[in-house]
Image 1 (cartoon, rainbow, N blue to C red):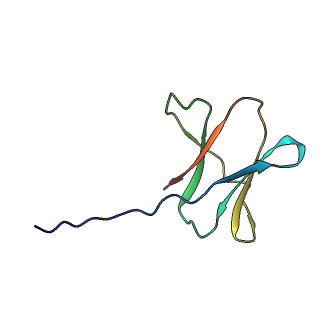
Image 2: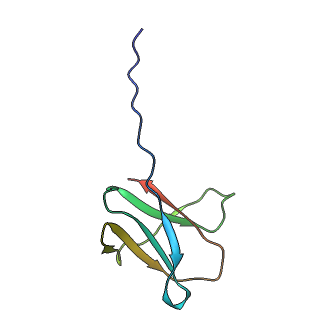
Image 3: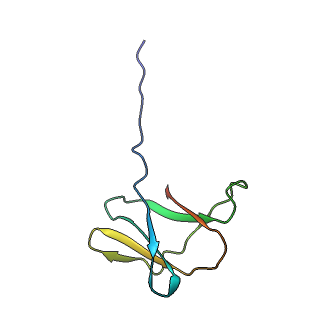
Length: 81
């Protein structure tokens, strides 16, 4: 018996830090092509929304997005598209 197994590489690291004015700075490697950031305000609901990448910038070898701080809890992840 022979099995053909395809293993997807793990999602790249998503770094989140504080930016000027209390905003959030999200960054991930530019080499991780095809990954898009998403967010949710409630992990138990399982509903994720795409972040707009209209203001995506490149800083060295990282994609960078700056997001406003809404004051509410927000959770972020990268998803392969």
